[in-house]
Image (cartoon, rainbow, N blue to C red; front, top):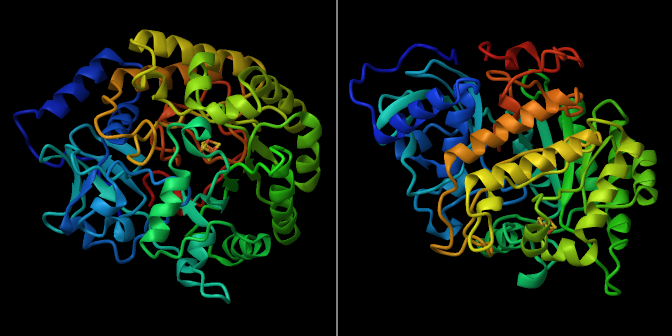
Length: 467
Ligand code: SF4
């Protein structure tokens, strides 16, 4: 589909959402409009009209690859969104001539944003007013394939980022359990339970050979004009054995690394997400072929880390987590240690910061410290999922849009300040070029010092304006 940059409609009166967005455009002239719109749609979630859902037969559906990323409970969805709605949508054009921007489509029945198709053309609307044109991600051919035991390939490894990245959650369960251990924003365990209760083919624990089989199919057999193939990410919950040993994590994850590398070799970067580890325990992963490691610190403030991530605080501790993160650059190199923050939990009730200013100052200090040590944190936006400790009914206010904009700006400025390389293996950055869906920090721009250090990573058909 040709994405048009023309205004969709002549509209005299701005809706309240449009007004707030335009005020932000004026307040932050250095921030691309795409960043502001994207953070707002992520923050508020989106509804799908029946006319939009009717256009999803050739669309890549949700696989609930790790968390639910929905604000509305699965069992409250009335239009089968959990099966047919896409995981992400690409918007462009509209009254602000937005460049193509990929956004995770987080279902929220109370959102002012709706994706609809009144005359057969997909549109994003806010309070009923058209904002931009919409594309859904294409259905990859391998989503029709299954393993010998009948498990769909798509349940073993799905695609995200408009098909640029493969993602496999090899353990859809975490052994940090209950309010004293589980991270308070995380619905990995409850999402897994909810999907299995609904009778979905949602295997909790995957087999290394099955994961390797699907990644081989994606990277070696699937047509590259359909799939960008820039990297793959292996993730899953934490493994702690009966003796309360966190080293059990290695016995579980290393066999996946070896099985995958045996089939794929080193052509595509492997990213691995696990608990933090000291460098002696990371070296075997590096030796086995892992290219990048993510030990997600989630929140910078030490007090909040201890409250929001009680299991991480108990088994590793904040200071040690931080030390191990910085030391792991010695094993993998700059641009290859990319722990995630859950941007927004800094302002969560009841323990978060009281003001946007304090929250921005804290997380910006975290960016600065980590990047000064060669660590490149990622900044996805918190989705307030209903089956989490923090997501209980009426427990949270919406985090202000200003906060997310200021965080994206701080991330980009700090990244440029330390002249860090791009996240290894990730597709291009910058407005109109970004293929990350869960936050807008990579939509900010490409640093002047860094045009495109890894060369063109995407097939021409996937590049901006040529889809
Ligand atoms: S470590 Fe925390 S964020 Fe990760 S899966 Fe377990 S509870 Fe969720």
